[in-house]
Length: 266
Length: 232
Image 1: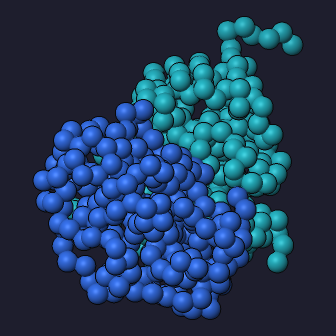
Image 2: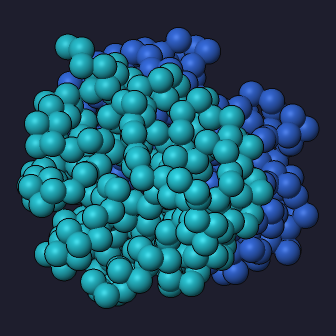
Image 3: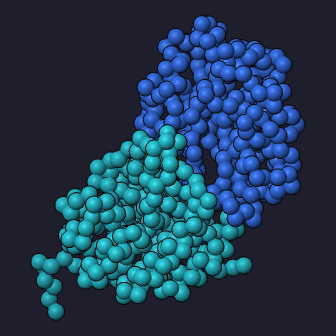
């Protein structure tokens, strides 16, 4: 069979040798030795979100704890795609595990530009897409088309977006979807309201239900979910997810607890 | 990251905060301004470790804080070795000013011990009255003066140590015009540090003359010239 030079070569498989990954935002832009031996247990490393242009920290950046979790609003500071590739590509190439690059999608054309910059880099397993806040099913389809290239593309969605995107995802059949943390609001110290991403075990029931919905729809799912204990891992795997994203588990001081989650040991 | 074990021996009220005496080996004691991530074992209510700083206490014991209100003596803790950059008190400093701006002086007072040990005169410039539980931990040779005294005598200090909340940096720099001072100094920037550098989450980011820096990794103490005028 002759190869059609007009059609891009698509990688259609996403294989994780181990079911654990880090949530985007949990471990920085490259695997770092300071994180300890945890990379031995991960199937892939997901970078912090990277946008086309550099982004500064949000003026109202904040960490707000609540019972069972915490909220983060950061503005996704990053050096922008060009500088990120220049700064990190060697460490991505030399990492002991495959890398998934999380890109912030602002428009389909910007995504296409970013995809071109990332194709050809060594040791990149896939791209995962942080969708724009105003994304609708039509735009999702255009974005997924714009992301087509050599690398598999994984759309990220939070539980609140499932009713909006489920039918579209069933049609598009992405290689995998990544169920990420929900968004919420908390009262800010200045009396206003601040919105951000929610982390911690309090979100687990919502995430487990959402993961089950996606799996039942026939989708392959990586799920985040406030996992800090092995029983949560077992519940996600029983629901049929192929990967579990960990966030605050990595930020614990007590490493033995994290290793119990990763190692299936008591 | 290495995790180590410690016991909480005693708790101490330090003004509005609570300090805890921990039985850490001396080589794990943080310098003034450094922090140490600590977590109570078998706690289901604490999602992330807390960042503890050296606090005033007995010289032969380590007091860290602020500890959570529900920690009790005999609690077992896990901790990581000290992180970050502490205060750089010059050995030659002879007139040291401690300036907590709209925060407790607890994190600056350990620096007073260091300064007194090298023969410096130390003054604590504090805007309001100190509570009795805090006052009892201020060395008797440390003068407690209003901030206005510092502003009226900019030639007195040869080193200044500030403690400031990151969120109020822009407000507090209006209180102290550093252009009138000729001395060196450092500022401890207070902010949540949920990932302690592991994730570069950006919550603790502070703008400096060298660009955006992370308080958790590049601080918590910064040379004052890097932070002060940039925050304006």
